Length: 339
Image 1 (tube, rainbow, N blue to C red):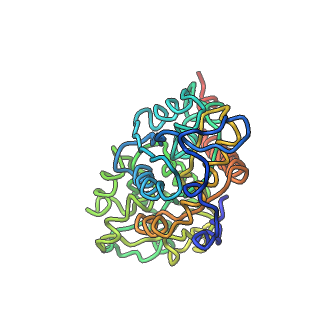
Image 2 (tube, helix red, strand yellow; image 1 turned 60 degrees about the vertical axis):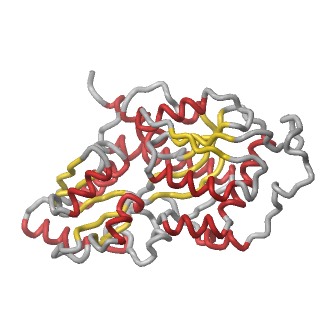
């Protein structure tokens, strides 16, 4: 399982060469065969989810810092549809010339959908991992008026009284649902998981007391956290989320379970030349060390967890393998179903 790197806060202090100040003429990029490369026109960063979501907000924060380090602007292009597949396929069909990138690689369709249903989209064949920017953990929360102060209190009450715990989530068979089903199975906790049309509806149900707890990514809960309407109970990652350092993990509360959240990363079309990949690898490292970007990400409760090409490629494959096992252990993989 993912361990949040402790060095992420140190990126701002790194001394890195700036592309924007280089001597190369950006209007005449060198050939993509192996020499230095620099873009000659604006770059599209495709977010395969709807505007206003956590991935879109991440994209806007990147866009804000982008021009400090790149001679050409970035344009955030949202292409929602197919639970993230539509935008990812669009990028995979784009020319590998450095002018189309995919943001949020490692979220739903890349981690879970390919095992839940037969589909043509294969993240390993469609795109190449570039860099990791953040991980959105899975957080369990209760209304602030709840009588239960900790998750342990709630689970103990449920088992003692043989009463189920109701949970509001955004969608069925998404990352949150899979995590909760696995948690229930491994801990013997009786959960009634209630999916909604989206995170906004799920959070509304939670704060209105329709369910006992809810589970979502931090950015989905943040407005209600700031308004003082929610009490955070646990984070499901292996280590504490840097955005909520005082929130204990499931393991710290005696539940021997942890899982990945949603990777928020960048991917590129297949066959992109290495020199273009390396340009963007260093560019995103610079952005992740930018003080304004660091502050913006803090405001979004999105921890900066930069990983380079080699490291993130390993992370992506491990997370994918872990989600596959979760789905198979729950008996939800489409190839496990009887015809």
